[in-house]
Structures are given as C-alpha cells and as structure tokens.
Length: 110
Image (cartoon, rainbow, N blue to C red; front, side, top):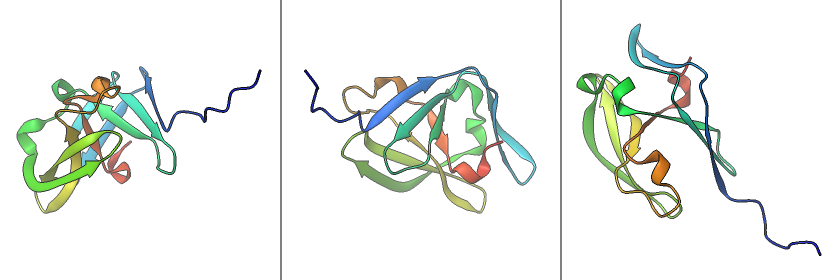
C-alpha cells in the first residue's frame, strides 16, 4: 500500500566535510562537524558548533525571526555586515540537533 505522506519539509544531515566561513579575509568558522539542514524551497544551510565559531567576533543584533518549523532565530552581525549569522537557541521539537549552532549567509561559506 502506497503512503500518502509527503517527504519531510526539513532534513538534517551531519557530515565531516570541512566548512569554513570567511568575511574580509577573517576566518570566522572552521569545522568538520557541521550539520547540513535541507528545507524545501531554501538552499542547504550548514549549522556549525559554537566551539568552531569565533563567537568573540560576532555581535548579537536585535533581529529575531520566527520560523514555524524551527522556532525563533537570533541573528548576529560581524563589523559592518549586519545579520550574517543566526542561531536557534530553543528550537522546535525535532530540531534539537541545531540548538545553539550557528548558520551563516551562504555567500560566506567556503
């Protein structure tokens, strides 16, 4: 019997590929412990453990965005670059794996 349930809207894919984030020649993150979040209709995003992010260079902004599937995202800026990173401090059920990790604007990834 065929199932009528659609594919999940969001899937999480831990991997060991190297992910780096650079802004103006400054290395902000370097990891082999990212989780790739794939969400229908959006480009894949790499969620990086805070231990692998130069959090001392990020400044929390006042921007908070609500996602009905992931929860509330707090944003971070780097120097003159506003809201280039975000993190879900208290994600929705099923998204606990990205809790406290940091994702960056995809243009910053290497």
